[in-house]
Length: 249
Length: 249
View 1 (cartoon, rainbow over the protein chains, first blue to last red):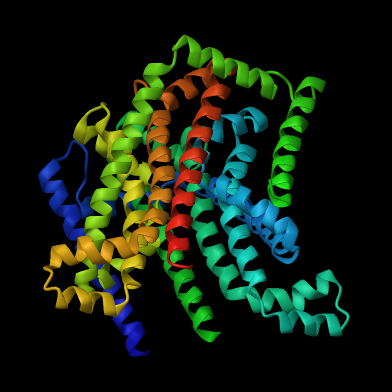
View 2 (view 1 turned 30 degrees about the vertical axis):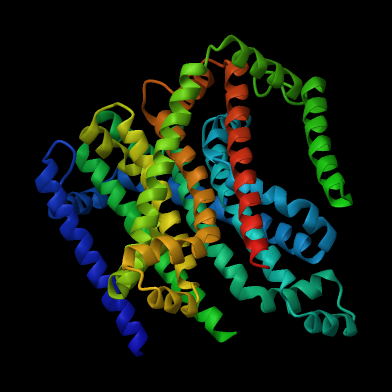
């Protein structure tokens, strides 16, 4: 274990401890009406994850998220490779992608619901539209910044487009593409959760919305805690891989 | 117009015409979407009659307040954090994973704390936007050349003066990048919160119209929100480019 890993582990521990203390302090300030203290929340979360009703919701959310992420990665990478490699198309479309990236996509949700109907496809579509564009934008820049000599080498070998992407562009652009994937991952997760919160009959987002409607503070806190723990854990792992990939170059 | 601009305009016009044709041909039925010319006409009717003015004013006012708070508090926090290295390193993982967390999960807590007025919505918009401002401002502050700080010391400027007259002007383009994100996030926060639970605003009107299949209100409002956010974003990008061009970047 290097000094740096030790340091970042220490930082993470200090941060978690600080957040727990702030949480407990906020509880003392606000009281039982809106919050539960950390310990009670952990206990309730433990009973929740062992209960029968929880697993169908979790698996529904996970399936929606996995499908959305797969679409976002597939579409984002293809778009990114095309626009990054074909300079003129890239120049025409990139500003549009940036503009679409900046719009509040939440306003598009009613349109998706009308198009796909209530249920799984709308959720998946909503998650995917959050993730596609950051992945595409990072891939465009990554492909553009691949050293020309590498591409020339590929030409000398007589590579076709598929071979070029597989053996030259993808490996050379991997660190930047991974950064895009990391951001796309977070946004897809948020998109899927939002989709479930606004219209769904199953899933963690739905569970959270029902809890809000019933003012079930225990359940609100437990689901929020699970979502935050999952998001924080995965995105820290992705961040660590991301940093390692960037260091190698 | 440059050739590039011409192509971009062509792509946009072609996309709108395609939608129009699909709607008129009945491939996309009327309940799913109105043809674009109808949306524009409905928008004109809504703006002319003023029937949605209260909702539009409420949403845009709340979003501006959230944006203003995110900018002021975000920049101030970044300046302070920049001075305390240990604190910043501890908070870094929080910033890195922040956008993976569905902030809307905190909405019920804010409602219990502040009541069902405008405050919880502004709170969500602020919470979404502030971290983007902090991260981008820190990124800008990291790039202030040492010679400028030395110049400030020679001029015997205090900490506050150095921040206001040297650091922040230098970091301005990066703060603007953060501001662009914050514009989108404050709108997402306000409109999302209005979707979930509120008594007015554009998000409320959109979801009300959605529930009643009232496309004559829903689509124009969606188009209006998208137009506003793209317009603000384009203006800020332009300003950002002017600032960078002045530095020869």
